[in-house]
Image (cartoon, rainbow, N blue to C red; front, side, top):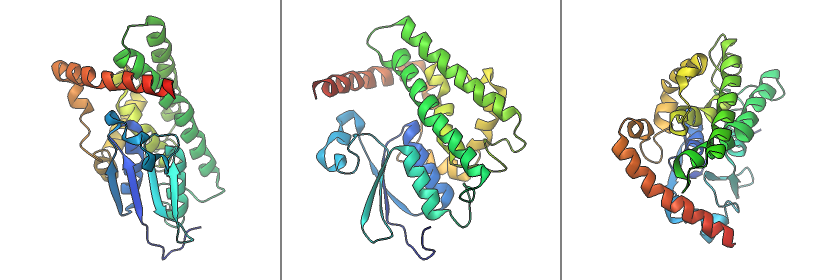
Amino acid sequence: MASKTRTPDITLYTTQTPNGIKISITLEELGLPYKTEKIDISKNTQKEPWFLAINPNGRIPALTDKFTDGKQINLFESGSIMQYLVEQYDSGAHKISYPAGSRETYEVNNWLFFLNAGVGPMQGQANHFNRYAPERIPYGINRYLNETRRLYKVLDTHLAGSASGYLVGDKCTIADIAHYGWISAGPFAGVELEEFPNLKKWQVQMSERDGVKKGQDVPEPNKMLELLKDPAALNEYLEKNSKWVVEGMKQDAKK
């Protein structure tokens, strides 16, 4: 358990992605002070030696903090970072968590891992095949879009029985926060929320939270919904980003 007098010394290394905003929203919901360093993934900043010293996998988000021993601790993988933040800084107030060992805490972990092992990877592949791949491969597109829809249906069915409208218990937790960026970006992958009324209601409820409003615009404003309404701007965005996505894959294959 973290000391009540402990002062955070947090730096968040991130960019504007569904995974990146998980952490900034968590920090805003907890009311923690933090510094932000924008990582330009289009220039492979996340592959530079200084960043690999923080996250050997070369991915965002990553976070550093002064640990209880006074030394820097390096955190990577969004689920790990979120669990660290609530264990270290939410063990008393439980703003977005539940007491350790409680039924609700284990249920939060269920949905956190569901996102990290299911929704995120499947929707990420749907994004790639539907938006960035240099050639249209119907099998890949259909495979990942259908799996993303299946996972959305699991969430929609679960939320139908939630009195609070949140995934676990009577409040927003890191399980909800982890899903928010991905579900909000569903239309970009090709999944419309109108197919899932309970999930859409949840997304609206989440979007109205102050911490979400602030955190989703870190390190820069989230413009995904605006892009989806402007075909010309979207095409320009895709053309620009698909080039470095494909080039990044080639560079990784050489290592």
